[in-house]
Length: 553
Image 1 (cartoon, one colour):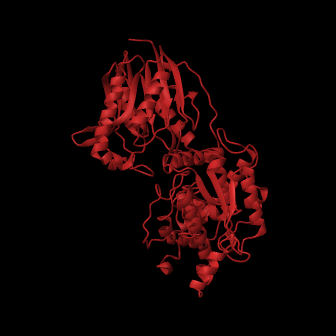
Image 2 (tube, rainbow, N blue to C red):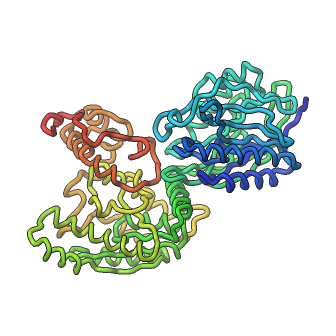
Image 3 (spheres, rainbow, N blue to C red):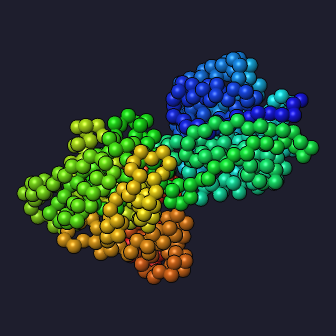
C-alpha cells in the first residue's frame, strides 16, 4: 500500500474516428508524463466524442478493439499506467468504457452506467448501460472511475464510495454551454460533499461539428474546495501529487487558471469550433459575403482569429440598393482584419433574371438578390475550394428572417446559436480585446459604425430590420422564453411584460420557419437549446400556445 501517488491529467483534443492518431497522441502524453504513476485522458479518447453512429459499424468496433489492445501492450514500456477511454463489445452490446492498463496488461475496467439521452446526447441508442462500477485497486489505492454522466446522478458515486473508493477520477466529454463552468463545479462539489471523497474532473477540448469543448478540468477536495483549475480551450498536461492523510487522500498540487467569462467564452467557442471544422474537413480556408453589416463583420473576425488572414476571403456583392456606407464599412472591415476583399456587383445578374421573370415583385424580387449572392459565392467556393461561411444569427433563424438558398446557404455558421444582442456584445468585446491564441489583429476588427447603425438587409430602398421585426432587445427576450426556456405565450408575456399578441405572432413566425431551419448549415452550439442538436420540432406542426393558434391552422 502506498501513501503517495502522482497522477497525470491530460486535457486533450480528439479527432472522431482517427483511432491511430488519437492513440499516438495518448502515448505522447504518456511519454510527457514521465514520473507519474497514472495517466487519465478524457472520455472515449481512443475514438473521439461524440462518435454517434460510428459505434454501430462492426468494422469500427473491431478496429477500436485492436487499437485499444495496442495501447494496453504499449504500457509494457516504462511510464505511467493508463486509464484508457474506449469502447467494449460484449455479447453484441457496445459499452462506453475505461480500461486500466499497466505493464502490458489490463488490470481492470469500468463501463458507463448512466447514458445521457437529452439535448445533444443520444447515447442510449448506441450504447448499453453497464452495471454499477467497482473501484480499481491500484498500488493499494481504491480508485473509482465514474464516466461523465455517471456523476450527474447520485447512484454511481454513492455506490463507489460504499465500495471503498478513496479517490474519484472522472473522464468527461462535456460540451461548452453558457454558464457550464459553474454548473459543473456545483455538481462536482455536491458529489464530493456527499461521498467525502476528492474528485478530479477531466474534460476534452476542441471542436466536433456543432460542438465546442472547453476543457476547464479541475480537482476538488472532499469539503468542496477547488484546489486545481486547468485552463479552458487549450490542451494541457498536469502532473499532480497526492498524499494519504488521516482524513483520506488529498491533492498537494495547486494550480489556478482564470476561465473566460461572457462574452469571451462564447467568442472562444466560435473560434475553436470553426478552426477544427475547417481543418478537419480539408478546406483551405473560408469565403463569406462581407456586406458591411455586423453579422458578416463578426463572422469574418472569428474566421480570421481562427484560421489566419490568408485563409479568409471577404466578398462584397452590392446591388442597386447597397449604400455607399455599406461599401465603405465592408472595405474597412477587410482592411482592419487584413483579409482579402473583392467587390462583385450582382446588378447584371439581377437584370438578367428580370428579363427571364419580368413579373417578379415584392418579396420574391427581393430574395432574388440574396440568392444571386449565394450563387456567386458558391461558384467562387467551387472554383477555389474555400468553404462558404454563412453569417445569419439565431434571432433571424428563429423567425425565418432569412432567405432559403440565399443568405442561409453555406457550409458552417459561427453565429447560428447567437442571438442578435449577443452579436452586438461579441462585436463590442472583440473591438476592445484580442483573445488568447487568436491569429487576427490586436486592435479593432470592425468600424464602430458597423455596431451602431440600424441593421438592414438592403433588399429594397430604405429597408431596416425593425420594419419587419420588433427591436432586437425585445425580440431576443421573447425568443429566450419561447426557444431556450420552452415557455408558453402567456408565460413569456408575463415574464417580459410584452403584449401577448406580439409574443403570439413571434411564436407563429418561429414555428412556420421550422422547414427553413431543417435546411440550414451546421453551426457552433452556445446555449442549452440550439437548433438542430437540442431543439427538434416537427415541420408540420399544429400546436401553438398563443391565442392565434386556431387562425394559423
